[in-house]
Image 1 (cartoon, rainbow, N blue to C red):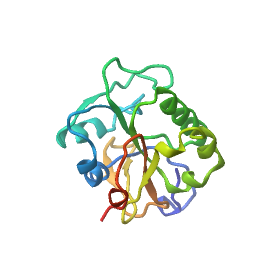
Image 2 (image 1 turned 60 degrees about the vertical axis):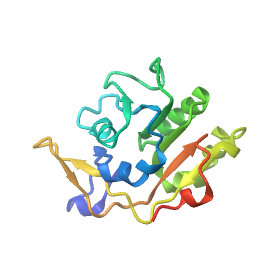
Image 3 (image 1 turned 120 degrees about the vertical axis):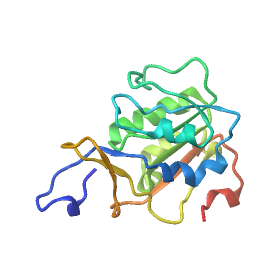
Image 4 (image 1 turned 90 degrees about the vertical axis):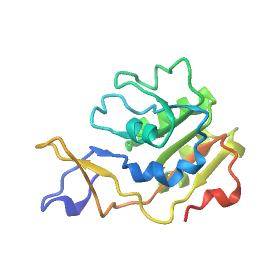
Length: 177
């Protein structure tokens, strides 16, 4: 992910993390009686996503060593995660999640919903696919390499949505205030 405002010379910066506010926005839609698998934590030692979900009252399983493309926990009911930004990894993750056939809510760049690969991946399951649209941009936390701290960003260069599978939300629930 890159943002021209980050520096005077263009550099790709891929270490952005989900802010607590992204989970707070949809907390009322995540069932409290379900065990959540935060599936995209492989090598994401700075991510506080599981911690945020727990603070919001959810039971969460995760591990920084689990590769979701090859592993799944024994006991979980649904997936709640911010999927990787790179298209090739994202496609693999989506295919895997559909194959697992568990309900999920994932944060993605909204432009992905217009891609050909989304239709191909969900081809026989489009009736289970829903998109929750926030009222503005999700501004991610950026890792500062020198200090190891996460700082909030204020000018994300794209809009994100919550792509949902087998959640059965009402039409009203798909538009956040």
